[in-house]
Image 1 (cartoon, helix red, strand yellow):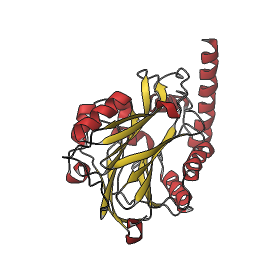
Image 2 (cartoon, rainbow, N blue to C red):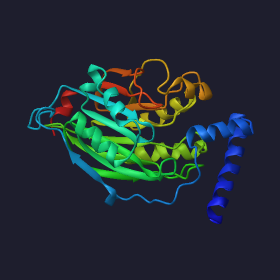
Image 3 (cartoon, helix red, strand yellow):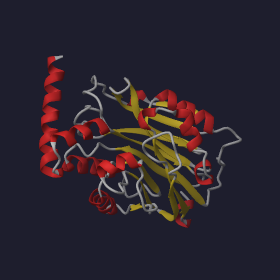
Length: 312
């Protein structure tokens, strides 16, 4: 217990220094930030590994995209951070609330536990892979990333990102997989990076670690998730870093990807969630702000597959 108390004091001290130096916040405002993004003390140590993979197969014939040699002309990718993996039934309705979301080929989910992931995959008709990142002290449940797909998933991979969360001590991860699209293969990563409470240089290291997982031959490719980019400068830095490996950022509509009560504490229009792509042609994107299950909104993007991508 003494060790945990010392860890908490050290993290709180770092938070005060960081917030006052970088953000100009008072101690009271920093406390609000702490409750907003963490709301809890450091979690018991949980070290995820590749052995923690959970997977399921619910893409039945009624839902399944073709698994033979044909290749789709377009691809719909969705990302949704479902806060603490709660309100799963409501999240299922959110993900069925417009034609783009209903027709999604891939859904990247963050803050999930295995039970909620399986429930969503079964109800919506997707195969899935899931890796936990940590055991979150908010609810003492596993907390991680899932990839849902109407196409065959193989080569699942867990990447542990450096730098634990400042207050809660939570591990953040990227979950990668290869998706069989008939005559082509798509490399996909589902990302949940640490919050603004972590020093910026450490957050940029996480972005770089994600990029490191993609070789030049990994094309087409998609990277989606919650990058916790709460300022326009954060978004610009993310976009510029990923351009170095030829990734482009899907152009979302103007406005925040999180609810207004959080946006008011951060920025007038913070966009935390993104879909980046390579070897695909961007067609359109959206934010489903009618969603109700989470403090984030689902985002989606439609891509056309390039002719060169349709053979392997």
